[in-house]
Image 1 (cartoon, each protein chain N blue to C red):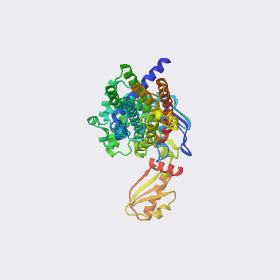
Image 2 (cartoon, rainbow over the protein chains, first blue to last red):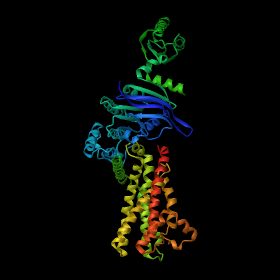
Image 3 (cartoon, chains in turn cyan, brown):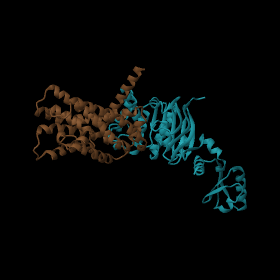
Image 4 (tube, rainbow over the protein chains, first blue to last red):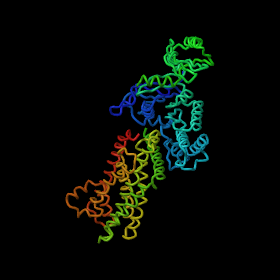
Length: 309
Length: 254
Protein backbone atom coordinates (compact mmCIF):
# COMPACT_ATOMS: atom_id res chain seq x y z
CA UNK A 1 0.00 0.00 0.00
CA UNK A 2 1.52 3.38 -0.99
CA UNK A 3 2.45 5.66 1.89
CA UNK A 4 0.46 8.78 2.58
CA UNK A 5 2.26 11.94 1.50
CA UNK A 6 -0.40 14.37 2.71
CA UNK A 7 -2.74 13.82 5.65
CA UNK A 8 -5.26 16.57 6.36
CA UNK A 9 -7.53 16.33 9.40
CA UNK A 10 -10.44 18.61 10.19
CA UNK A 11 -8.75 21.62 8.59
CA UNK A 12 -10.44 24.95 9.10
CA UNK A 13 -9.70 28.55 8.10
CA UNK A 14 -11.67 31.59 9.13
CA UNK A 15 -11.18 35.16 7.98
CA UNK A 16 -13.17 37.13 10.55
CA UNK A 17 -16.73 35.86 10.29
CA UNK A 18 -16.13 34.15 6.96
CA UNK A 19 -15.37 30.44 7.06
CA UNK A 20 -13.27 29.81 3.96
CA UNK A 21 -12.46 26.18 4.74
CA UNK A 22 -14.75 24.28 7.07
CA UNK A 23 -13.30 21.16 8.64
CA UNK A 24 -12.03 19.23 5.62
CA UNK A 25 -10.14 15.93 5.87
CA UNK A 26 -8.41 13.92 3.15
CA UNK A 27 -5.23 12.05 2.35
CA UNK A 28 -3.05 12.00 -0.74
CA UNK A 29 -0.95 8.91 -1.41
CA UNK A 30 2.56 8.83 -2.82
CA UNK A 31 2.58 9.05 -6.62
CA UNK A 32 -1.07 10.04 -6.81
CA UNK A 33 -2.58 12.96 -8.75
CA UNK A 34 -5.24 14.37 -6.47
CA UNK A 35 -7.56 17.05 -7.82
CA UNK A 36 -9.62 19.59 -5.94
CA UNK A 37 -12.59 20.76 -7.98
CA UNK A 38 -14.85 23.60 -7.02
CA UNK A 39 -16.37 26.90 -8.08
CA UNK A 40 -14.78 30.27 -7.23
CA UNK A 41 -14.81 30.86 -3.49
CA UNK A 42 -15.11 27.15 -2.65
CA UNK A 43 -11.90 27.28 -0.61
CA UNK A 44 -9.47 25.55 -3.01
CA UNK A 45 -6.77 28.21 -3.00
CA UNK A 46 -7.06 28.76 0.77
CA UNK A 47 -6.57 25.01 1.21
CA UNK A 48 -3.43 25.04 -0.94
CA UNK A 49 -2.11 28.10 0.92
CA UNK A 50 -2.53 26.29 4.24
CA UNK A 51 -0.94 23.11 2.90
CA UNK A 52 2.09 25.05 1.65
CA UNK A 53 2.50 27.08 4.84
CA UNK A 54 1.67 30.44 3.28
CA UNK A 55 -1.17 30.98 5.77
CA UNK A 56 -1.84 29.34 9.10
CA UNK A 57 -4.96 27.25 9.65
CA UNK A 58 -7.48 28.34 12.28
CA UNK A 59 -7.85 24.71 13.38
CA UNK A 60 -7.03 21.19 12.24
CA UNK A 61 -3.86 19.33 11.37
CA UNK A 62 -1.71 18.99 8.28
CA UNK A 63 0.98 16.37 7.90
CA UNK A 64 3.25 16.30 4.86
CA UNK A 65 6.00 13.68 4.51
CA UNK A 66 5.15 12.79 8.13
CA UNK A 67 6.00 16.33 9.31
CA UNK A 68 3.54 18.80 10.77
CA UNK A 69 2.75 21.97 8.87
CA UNK A 70 3.29 24.82 9.76
CA UNK A 71 5.67 23.74 12.54
CA UNK A 72 8.12 22.26 9.99
CA UNK A 73 7.24 24.53 7.09
CA UNK A 74 10.82 25.27 5.98
CA UNK A 75 11.81 21.59 5.90
CA UNK A 76 8.64 20.69 4.01
CA UNK A 77 8.98 23.57 1.54
CA UNK A 78 12.50 22.42 0.69
CA UNK A 79 10.95 19.27 -0.86
CA UNK A 80 7.85 20.65 -2.57
CA UNK A 81 7.11 22.79 -5.58
CA UNK A 82 4.22 25.23 -5.61
CA UNK A 83 2.55 26.82 -8.61
CA UNK A 84 0.44 29.64 -7.21
CA UNK A 85 -2.83 30.65 -8.85
CA UNK A 86 -1.46 33.63 -10.79
CA UNK A 87 1.57 33.32 -13.07
CA UNK A 88 3.74 35.25 -10.65
CA UNK A 89 7.05 35.81 -12.37
CA UNK A 90 9.34 38.82 -12.09
CA UNK A 91 8.59 40.78 -15.26
CA UNK A 92 11.86 42.72 -15.15
CA UNK A 93 13.98 39.57 -14.92
CA UNK A 94 14.65 37.33 -17.90
CA UNK A 95 13.23 33.82 -18.02
CA UNK A 96 16.59 32.40 -17.02
CA UNK A 97 17.05 34.90 -14.17
CA UNK A 98 13.62 33.98 -12.79
CA UNK A 99 14.62 30.32 -12.68
CA UNK A 100 18.01 31.08 -11.17
CA UNK A 101 16.41 33.17 -8.43
CA UNK A 102 14.25 30.17 -7.52
CA UNK A 103 17.28 27.91 -7.67
CA UNK A 104 19.23 30.14 -5.28
CA UNK A 105 16.28 30.30 -2.89
CA UNK A 106 16.10 26.49 -2.89
CA UNK A 107 19.82 26.50 -2.10
CA UNK A 108 20.71 24.50 -5.22
CA UNK A 109 24.36 24.18 -6.20
CA UNK A 110 25.15 26.72 -9.05
CA UNK A 111 26.22 24.13 -11.64
CA UNK A 112 23.18 21.96 -11.00
CA UNK A 113 21.00 25.06 -11.03
CA UNK A 114 22.20 26.09 -14.51
CA UNK A 115 21.76 22.55 -15.83
CA UNK A 116 18.26 22.22 -14.35
CA UNK A 117 17.24 25.68 -15.54
CA UNK A 118 18.36 24.93 -19.14
CA UNK A 119 16.54 21.56 -19.10
CA UNK A 120 13.29 23.08 -17.82
CA UNK A 121 13.43 25.96 -20.31
CA UNK A 122 13.83 23.43 -23.10
CA UNK A 123 10.98 21.26 -21.78
CA UNK A 124 8.71 24.30 -21.67
CA UNK A 125 9.90 25.41 -25.12
CA UNK A 126 11.16 28.68 -23.68
CA UNK A 127 14.89 28.15 -24.18
CA UNK A 128 15.18 30.47 -27.17
CA UNK A 129 13.42 33.20 -25.14
CA UNK A 130 15.50 32.71 -21.97
CA UNK A 131 17.36 36.04 -22.30
CA UNK A 132 14.24 38.12 -22.83
CA UNK A 133 12.60 39.91 -19.88
CA UNK A 134 9.46 38.06 -18.77
CA UNK A 135 7.41 41.20 -19.45
CA UNK A 136 7.79 40.46 -23.16
CA UNK A 137 6.30 36.95 -22.72
CA UNK A 138 2.73 36.05 -23.61
CA UNK A 139 0.37 34.85 -20.85
CA UNK A 140 0.92 31.23 -21.84
CA UNK A 141 4.71 31.68 -21.81
CA UNK A 142 4.54 33.28 -18.35
CA UNK A 143 2.46 30.40 -17.04
CA UNK A 144 4.96 27.91 -18.43
CA UNK A 145 7.83 29.91 -16.90
CA UNK A 146 5.96 29.90 -13.59
CA UNK A 147 5.57 26.12 -13.84
CA UNK A 148 9.27 25.79 -14.63
CA UNK A 149 10.05 27.87 -11.49
CA UNK A 150 7.87 25.45 -9.53
CA UNK A 151 9.82 22.50 -10.89
CA UNK A 152 13.23 23.98 -9.99
CA UNK A 153 12.91 22.34 -6.58
CA UNK A 154 12.72 18.87 -8.15
CA UNK A 155 10.45 18.15 -5.18
CA UNK A 156 8.56 14.88 -4.83
CA UNK A 157 5.33 16.74 -4.09
CA UNK A 158 3.82 19.44 -6.29
CA UNK A 159 0.96 21.81 -5.55
CA UNK A 160 -0.51 23.23 -8.75
CA UNK A 161 -3.21 25.86 -8.34
CA UNK A 162 -5.20 26.13 -11.59
CA UNK A 163 -2.22 25.14 -13.77
CA UNK A 164 -3.95 25.65 -17.13
CA UNK A 165 -6.25 28.50 -16.18
CA UNK A 166 -6.54 31.21 -18.82
CA UNK A 167 -4.30 29.43 -21.31
CA UNK A 168 -5.08 28.88 -24.97
CA UNK A 169 -5.84 25.31 -26.02
CA UNK A 170 -2.33 24.62 -27.30
CA UNK A 171 -0.55 25.92 -24.16
CA UNK A 172 -3.07 24.15 -21.88
CA UNK A 173 -2.43 20.89 -23.71
CA UNK A 174 1.29 21.36 -23.31
CA UNK A 175 0.95 22.07 -19.57
CA UNK A 176 -1.25 18.97 -19.14
CA UNK A 177 1.39 16.98 -20.99
CA UNK A 178 4.04 18.19 -18.55
CA UNK A 179 1.83 17.25 -15.58
CA UNK A 180 1.24 13.76 -17.02
CA UNK A 181 4.99 13.40 -17.50
CA UNK A 182 5.62 14.39 -13.88
CA UNK A 183 3.09 11.80 -12.72
CA UNK A 184 4.88 9.15 -14.76
CA UNK A 185 8.09 10.11 -12.95
CA UNK A 186 6.28 9.20 -9.73
CA UNK A 187 5.70 12.70 -8.37
CA UNK A 188 2.76 13.26 -6.06
CA UNK A 189 0.59 16.08 -7.36
CA UNK A 190 -2.22 18.02 -5.76
CA UNK A 191 -3.93 20.27 -8.25
CA UNK A 192 -6.95 22.51 -8.25
CA UNK A 193 -8.90 23.12 -11.40
CA UNK A 194 -12.13 24.45 -12.84
CA UNK A 195 -11.66 22.26 -15.86
CA UNK A 196 -13.65 19.06 -15.35
CA UNK A 197 -12.23 17.35 -18.42
CA UNK A 198 -8.75 18.10 -17.12
CA UNK A 199 -9.60 16.63 -13.72
CA UNK A 200 -11.10 13.55 -15.34
CA UNK A 201 -8.09 13.01 -17.59
CA UNK A 202 -5.32 13.75 -15.12
CA UNK A 203 -6.52 12.88 -11.64
CA UNK A 204 -6.49 9.53 -9.88
CA UNK A 205 -8.93 10.93 -7.32
CA UNK A 206 -10.86 14.15 -7.01
CA UNK A 207 -12.44 16.03 -4.13
CA UNK A 208 -15.33 18.31 -4.98
CA UNK A 209 -15.35 21.36 -2.73
CA UNK A 210 -18.28 23.65 -2.14
CA UNK A 211 -18.63 26.39 0.47
CA UNK A 212 -15.43 25.34 2.23
CA UNK A 213 -16.47 21.69 2.59
CA UNK A 214 -15.68 18.56 0.66
CA UNK A 215 -18.94 17.42 -0.92
CA UNK A 216 -17.53 14.22 -2.41
CA UNK A 217 -14.21 12.49 -2.76
CA UNK A 218 -13.39 9.46 -4.96
CA UNK A 219 -12.01 8.43 -8.34
CA UNK A 220 -13.69 10.23 -11.26
CA UNK A 221 -15.17 6.91 -12.49
CA UNK A 222 -16.66 5.96 -9.13
CA UNK A 223 -18.03 9.45 -8.62
CA UNK A 224 -19.80 9.27 -11.96
CA UNK A 225 -21.19 5.80 -11.21
CA UNK A 226 -22.38 6.80 -7.79
CA UNK A 227 -24.65 9.42 -9.33
CA UNK A 228 -27.27 7.06 -10.72
CA UNK A 229 -29.91 9.76 -11.15
CA UNK A 230 -27.63 11.54 -13.63
CA UNK A 231 -27.30 8.53 -15.92
CA UNK A 232 -28.99 9.07 -19.26
CA UNK A 233 -30.26 7.57 -22.49
CA UNK A 234 -29.37 9.54 -25.61
CA UNK A 235 -31.60 8.79 -28.61
CA UNK A 236 -31.82 10.28 -32.08
CA UNK A 237 -35.15 10.06 -33.89
CA UNK A 238 -36.05 10.55 -37.57
CA UNK A 239 -38.12 13.63 -36.65
CA UNK A 240 -38.59 15.92 -33.63
CA UNK A 241 -40.37 14.01 -30.81
CA UNK A 242 -42.96 15.42 -28.41
CA UNK A 243 -40.76 16.36 -25.45
CA UNK A 244 -43.77 16.87 -23.17
CA UNK A 245 -44.91 13.29 -23.76
CA UNK A 246 -41.38 12.01 -23.31
CA UNK A 247 -41.00 13.66 -19.90
CA UNK A 248 -44.16 11.88 -18.72
CA UNK A 249 -42.64 8.43 -19.35
CA UNK A 250 -42.02 6.47 -16.16
CA UNK A 251 -38.47 6.70 -14.77
CA UNK A 252 -37.43 9.82 -16.67
CA UNK A 253 -36.41 12.70 -14.39
CA UNK A 254 -35.37 15.27 -16.99
CA UNK A 255 -35.32 15.62 -20.76
CA UNK A 256 -32.87 17.70 -22.75
CA UNK A 257 -33.89 18.19 -26.36
CA UNK A 258 -31.54 19.04 -29.24
CA UNK A 259 -33.90 19.06 -32.24
CA UNK A 260 -34.29 15.35 -33.23
CA UNK A 261 -31.85 14.24 -30.51
CA UNK A 262 -32.96 13.87 -26.88
CA UNK A 263 -31.13 13.09 -23.67
CA UNK A 264 -33.33 11.53 -20.97
CA UNK A 265 -31.88 11.46 -17.44
CA UNK A 266 -32.85 8.42 -15.37
CA UNK A 267 -31.61 6.20 -12.54
CA UNK A 268 -32.76 3.15 -14.63
CA UNK A 269 -31.34 3.56 -18.16
CA UNK A 270 -32.09 -0.06 -19.24
CA UNK A 271 -35.81 0.17 -18.50
CA UNK A 272 -36.12 3.66 -19.94
CA UNK A 273 -34.45 2.49 -23.15
CA UNK A 274 -37.22 -0.10 -23.61
CA UNK A 275 -39.91 2.52 -22.91
CA UNK A 276 -38.32 4.89 -25.45
CA UNK A 277 -38.40 2.17 -28.14
CA UNK A 278 -42.11 1.61 -27.37
CA UNK A 279 -42.66 5.39 -27.49
CA UNK A 280 -41.03 5.54 -30.93
CA UNK A 281 -43.23 2.70 -32.24
CA UNK A 282 -46.40 4.37 -30.88
CA UNK A 283 -45.51 7.70 -32.50
CA UNK A 284 -44.21 6.27 -35.82
CA UNK A 285 -40.71 7.59 -35.14
CA UNK A 286 -37.64 5.88 -36.55
CA UNK A 287 -34.74 5.44 -34.13
CA UNK A 288 -31.49 6.52 -35.82
CA UNK A 289 -29.22 5.90 -32.84
CA UNK A 290 -29.46 5.07 -29.13
CA UNK A 291 -26.98 4.80 -26.30
CA UNK A 292 -26.85 4.90 -22.53
CA UNK A 293 -24.41 7.21 -20.76
CA UNK A 294 -23.06 7.30 -17.23
CA UNK A 295 -23.14 10.64 -15.42
CA UNK A 296 -20.34 12.95 -16.52
CA UNK A 297 -18.07 14.48 -13.94
CA UNK A 298 -19.70 17.78 -14.85
CA UNK A 299 -23.12 16.35 -13.91
CA UNK A 300 -21.73 15.15 -10.60
CA UNK A 301 -20.04 18.47 -9.98
CA UNK A 302 -23.09 20.58 -10.77
CA UNK A 303 -25.36 18.32 -8.78
CA UNK A 304 -23.15 18.54 -5.71
CA UNK A 305 -22.63 22.29 -6.01
CA UNK A 306 -26.43 22.81 -6.28
CA UNK A 307 -26.95 20.65 -3.20
CA UNK A 308 -24.29 22.66 -1.36
CA UNK A 309 -25.93 25.94 -2.34
CA UNK B 1 22.96 21.69 17.45
CA UNK B 2 25.03 24.88 17.45
CA UNK B 3 26.49 23.90 14.05
CA UNK B 4 22.96 23.29 12.66
CA UNK B 5 21.94 26.72 13.85
CA UNK B 6 25.01 28.27 12.23
CA UNK B 7 24.32 26.49 8.93
CA UNK B 8 20.68 27.54 9.03
CA UNK B 9 21.64 31.18 9.58
CA UNK B 10 24.26 31.11 6.83
CA UNK B 11 21.79 29.53 4.41
CA UNK B 12 19.13 32.12 5.33
CA UNK B 13 21.67 34.92 4.83
CA UNK B 14 22.64 33.59 1.37
CA UNK B 15 18.96 33.51 0.44
CA UNK B 16 18.50 37.07 1.77
CA UNK B 17 21.40 38.14 -0.48
CA UNK B 18 19.73 36.45 -3.47
CA UNK B 19 16.55 38.41 -2.71
CA UNK B 20 18.59 41.61 -2.35
CA UNK B 21 20.23 40.99 -5.75
CA UNK B 22 16.78 40.53 -7.29
CA UNK B 23 15.59 43.76 -5.64
CA UNK B 24 18.60 45.68 -6.98
CA UNK B 25 17.78 44.43 -10.47
CA UNK B 26 14.06 45.05 -10.29
CA UNK B 27 13.54 48.11 -8.08
CA UNK B 28 16.54 50.48 -8.37
CA UNK B 29 15.30 51.98 -11.62
CA UNK B 30 11.64 52.28 -10.61
CA UNK B 31 10.15 55.78 -10.79
CA UNK B 32 9.31 56.13 -7.06
CA UNK B 33 12.83 55.01 -6.10
CA UNK B 34 14.53 57.59 -8.30
CA UNK B 35 12.10 60.39 -7.45
CA UNK B 36 12.00 59.88 -3.69
CA UNK B 37 15.56 58.60 -3.30
CA UNK B 38 17.60 60.93 -5.49
CA UNK B 39 15.65 63.83 -6.99
CA UNK B 40 13.63 64.72 -3.92
CA UNK B 41 16.49 65.16 -1.43
CA UNK B 42 18.52 67.08 -4.01
CA UNK B 43 15.75 69.55 -4.82
CA UNK B 44 14.63 69.73 -1.22
CA UNK B 45 18.14 70.64 -0.18
CA UNK B 46 18.51 73.25 -2.91
CA UNK B 47 15.10 74.76 -2.13
CA UNK B 48 16.14 75.16 1.48
CA UNK B 49 19.62 76.60 1.07
CA UNK B 50 19.62 78.65 -2.14
CA UNK B 51 19.45 82.34 -1.31
CA UNK B 52 19.87 81.84 2.45
CA UNK B 53 22.91 82.84 4.40
CA UNK B 54 23.65 79.48 6.04
CA UNK B 55 27.05 78.24 7.11
CA UNK B 56 28.15 75.67 4.46
CA UNK B 57 29.96 73.78 7.19
CA UNK B 58 26.63 73.27 8.95
CA UNK B 59 24.86 72.34 5.71
CA UNK B 60 27.10 69.43 4.70
CA UNK B 61 26.25 67.04 7.55
CA UNK B 62 22.60 67.98 7.07
CA UNK B 63 22.84 67.15 3.37
CA UNK B 64 24.49 63.83 4.15
CA UNK B 65 21.86 62.96 6.77
CA UNK B 66 19.06 63.83 4.37
CA UNK B 67 20.51 61.85 1.47
CA UNK B 68 20.97 58.78 3.69
CA UNK B 69 17.47 59.12 5.15
CA UNK B 70 15.69 59.71 1.84
CA UNK B 71 17.59 57.12 -0.19
CA UNK B 72 17.32 54.42 2.52
CA UNK B 73 13.57 54.99 2.69
CA UNK B 74 13.12 55.06 -1.10
CA UNK B 75 13.62 51.40 -2.07
CA UNK B 76 12.24 49.37 0.83
CA UNK B 77 8.73 50.91 0.86
CA UNK B 78 8.30 50.21 -2.87
CA UNK B 79 9.05 46.49 -2.77
CA UNK B 80 6.17 45.06 -0.75
CA UNK B 81 3.31 46.87 -2.55
CA UNK B 82 4.70 45.93 -5.97
CA UNK B 83 5.28 42.31 -4.95
CA UNK B 84 1.76 42.22 -3.51
CA UNK B 85 0.23 43.55 -6.72
CA UNK B 86 2.22 41.26 -9.00
CA UNK B 87 1.66 38.22 -6.70
CA UNK B 88 5.41 37.52 -6.62
CA UNK B 89 5.29 37.76 -2.82
CA UNK B 90 3.16 34.60 -2.74
CA UNK B 91 5.80 32.82 -4.81
CA UNK B 92 8.50 33.85 -2.31
CA UNK B 93 6.35 32.64 0.60
CA UNK B 94 6.13 29.15 -0.89
CA UNK B 95 9.92 28.81 -1.10
CA UNK B 96 12.09 27.48 1.72
CA UNK B 97 13.06 30.96 2.92
CA UNK B 98 12.30 32.22 6.44
CA UNK B 99 10.01 35.24 6.33
CA UNK B 100 12.55 37.38 8.18
CA UNK B 101 15.13 36.55 5.49
CA UNK B 102 12.78 37.93 2.80
CA UNK B 103 12.52 41.15 4.82
CA UNK B 104 16.29 41.17 5.41
CA UNK B 105 16.90 40.85 1.65
CA UNK B 106 14.66 43.86 0.99
CA UNK B 107 16.44 45.81 3.73
CA UNK B 108 19.88 44.98 2.30
CA UNK B 109 18.84 46.21 -1.17
CA UNK B 110 17.64 49.48 0.33
CA UNK B 111 20.76 49.74 2.50
CA UNK B 112 23.05 49.38 -0.55
CA UNK B 113 21.09 52.05 -2.42
CA UNK B 114 21.59 54.44 0.51
CA UNK B 115 25.32 53.63 0.67
CA UNK B 116 25.77 54.34 -3.04
CA UNK B 117 23.74 57.58 -2.88
CA UNK B 118 25.53 58.86 0.21
CA UNK B 119 28.97 58.43 -1.36
CA UNK B 120 28.53 61.74 -3.24
CA UNK B 121 27.94 63.99 -0.17
CA UNK B 122 30.55 62.00 1.73
CA UNK B 123 33.18 62.75 -0.94
CA UNK B 124 32.04 66.39 -0.87
CA UNK B 125 32.64 66.52 2.88
CA UNK B 126 36.05 64.88 2.64
CA UNK B 127 37.09 67.33 -0.11
CA UNK B 128 35.70 70.51 1.44
CA UNK B 129 36.34 69.91 5.13
CA UNK B 130 39.72 68.41 6.06
CA UNK B 131 39.12 65.13 7.94
CA UNK B 132 41.38 62.61 9.62
CA UNK B 133 41.33 59.03 8.32
CA UNK B 134 39.76 57.98 11.62
CA UNK B 135 36.91 60.49 11.22
CA UNK B 136 36.27 59.31 7.64
CA UNK B 137 36.15 55.70 8.84
CA UNK B 138 33.76 56.70 11.62
CA UNK B 139 31.61 58.54 9.08
CA UNK B 140 31.45 55.45 6.84
CA UNK B 141 30.45 53.24 9.79
CA UNK B 142 27.80 55.70 10.98
CA UNK B 143 26.43 56.05 7.44
CA UNK B 144 26.24 52.25 7.14
CA UNK B 145 24.43 51.99 10.47
CA UNK B 146 22.04 54.80 9.58
CA UNK B 147 21.38 53.35 6.12
CA UNK B 148 20.46 49.99 7.60
CA UNK B 149 18.29 51.53 10.28
CA UNK B 150 16.33 53.76 7.88
CA UNK B 151 15.96 50.93 5.38
CA UNK B 152 14.14 49.07 8.16
CA UNK B 153 12.16 52.23 8.87
CA UNK B 154 11.12 52.37 5.19
CA UNK B 155 10.12 48.72 5.31
CA UNK B 156 8.00 49.38 8.39
CA UNK B 157 6.19 52.17 6.56
CA UNK B 158 5.27 49.65 3.83
CA UNK B 159 3.60 47.26 6.28
CA UNK B 160 0.01 48.37 5.50
CA UNK B 161 -1.18 45.79 2.94
CA UNK B 162 -1.36 48.12 -0.08
CA UNK B 163 -0.70 46.89 -3.61
CA UNK B 164 0.12 50.30 -5.09
CA UNK B 165 3.48 52.00 -4.35
CA UNK B 166 1.78 55.41 -4.51
CA UNK B 167 -0.33 54.57 -1.43
CA UNK B 168 2.76 53.72 0.58
CA UNK B 169 4.76 56.67 -0.78
CA UNK B 170 2.01 58.99 0.44
CA UNK B 171 2.28 57.46 3.92
CA UNK B 172 6.08 57.68 3.91
CA UNK B 173 5.97 61.33 2.81
CA UNK B 174 3.58 62.14 5.63
CA UNK B 175 6.05 60.65 8.11
CA UNK B 176 9.35 61.65 6.53
CA UNK B 177 8.90 65.37 5.92
CA UNK B 178 7.98 66.37 9.49
CA UNK B 179 10.99 64.37 10.71
CA UNK B 180 13.33 66.45 8.53
CA UNK B 181 12.23 69.63 10.33
CA UNK B 182 12.43 68.40 13.90
CA UNK B 183 15.64 66.41 13.68
CA UNK B 184 18.25 69.16 13.49
CA UNK B 185 18.95 68.88 9.77
CA UNK B 186 18.11 72.39 8.67
CA UNK B 187 17.39 73.96 12.04
CA UNK B 188 20.07 73.22 14.66
CA UNK B 189 18.69 71.33 17.65
CA UNK B 190 19.84 74.11 19.97
CA UNK B 191 17.67 76.62 18.09
CA UNK B 192 14.49 74.52 18.26
CA UNK B 193 11.71 75.75 20.58
CA UNK B 194 11.46 73.57 23.70
CA UNK B 195 8.33 71.55 22.64
CA UNK B 196 9.98 70.74 19.27
CA UNK B 197 13.24 69.88 20.99
CA UNK B 198 11.40 67.39 23.22
CA UNK B 199 9.67 65.98 20.15
CA UNK B 200 13.02 65.68 18.38
CA UNK B 201 14.25 63.30 21.08
CA UNK B 202 11.77 60.72 19.74
CA UNK B 203 12.84 61.13 16.12
CA UNK B 204 15.04 58.36 14.72
CA UNK B 205 16.80 60.96 12.59
CA UNK B 206 17.90 63.26 15.42
CA UNK B 207 20.74 61.10 16.70
CA UNK B 208 22.03 60.33 13.22
CA UNK B 209 22.10 64.02 12.23
CA UNK B 210 23.68 64.86 15.59
CA UNK B 211 26.52 62.36 15.30
CA UNK B 212 27.25 63.55 11.75
CA UNK B 213 27.37 67.13 13.05
CA UNK B 214 29.74 66.05 15.78
CA UNK B 215 32.04 64.15 13.39
CA UNK B 216 32.16 66.80 10.66
CA UNK B 217 31.95 70.08 12.59
CA UNK B 218 32.26 69.09 16.25
CA UNK B 219 28.89 70.74 16.96
CA UNK B 220 26.85 67.76 18.20
CA UNK B 221 24.43 68.29 21.07
CA UNK B 222 24.67 64.80 22.57
CA UNK B 223 27.69 62.61 23.24
CA UNK B 224 28.52 60.44 20.16
CA UNK B 225 28.16 57.39 22.40
CA UNK B 226 24.59 58.40 23.28
CA UNK B 227 23.87 58.97 19.58
CA UNK B 228 25.29 55.56 18.65
CA UNK B 229 23.42 53.74 21.39
CA UNK B 230 20.17 55.42 20.38
CA UNK B 231 20.65 54.49 16.69
CA UNK B 232 21.56 50.87 17.55
CA UNK B 233 18.63 50.59 19.99
CA UNK B 234 16.28 52.10 17.45
CA UNK B 235 17.52 49.61 14.80
CA UNK B 236 16.98 46.59 17.05
CA UNK B 237 13.48 47.70 18.05
CA UNK B 238 12.64 48.47 14.41
CA UNK B 239 13.84 45.05 13.24
CA UNK B 240 11.48 43.34 15.65
CA UNK B 241 8.53 45.61 14.86
CA UNK B 242 9.06 45.21 11.08
CA UNK B 243 8.80 41.40 11.27
CA UNK B 244 5.71 41.52 13.50
CA UNK B 245 3.96 44.22 11.43
CA UNK B 246 4.57 42.50 8.10
CA UNK B 247 3.61 39.08 9.46
CA UNK B 248 0.35 40.59 10.71
CA UNK B 249 -0.51 42.21 7.38
CA UNK B 250 0.47 39.15 5.33
CA UNK B 251 -2.97 37.47 5.06
CA UNK B 252 -4.44 40.69 3.65
CA UNK B 253 -1.73 40.80 0.97
CA UNK B 254 -2.64 37.41 -0.55
